[in-house]
Length: 113
Figure (cartoon, rainbow, N blue to C red):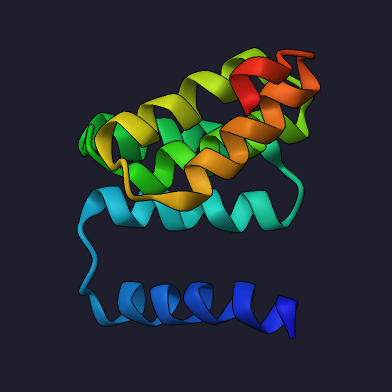
């Protein structure tokens, strides 16, 4: 079931790309997400960076970029991206989860709490 929940937004996004309904930032994010799913994390990060350059308020791109950095073990960089996502959208709960996990990994337990 979890895999279905992850793939459903990707399928919808890809359908929108084909239909020409996405802007360039969303297209870059979608490309990044596809790389991410395939384990090509550096390529994913480059695409997320481009999405953010095109739309500096793209909270989901910051979150996914933080997730990619966390998967690479670059927890300090992950906290920066999760933190930016939190600053831009304080209600985005996933960014707090990612931030907390990265801070625990860095041994910064008080901050994580």
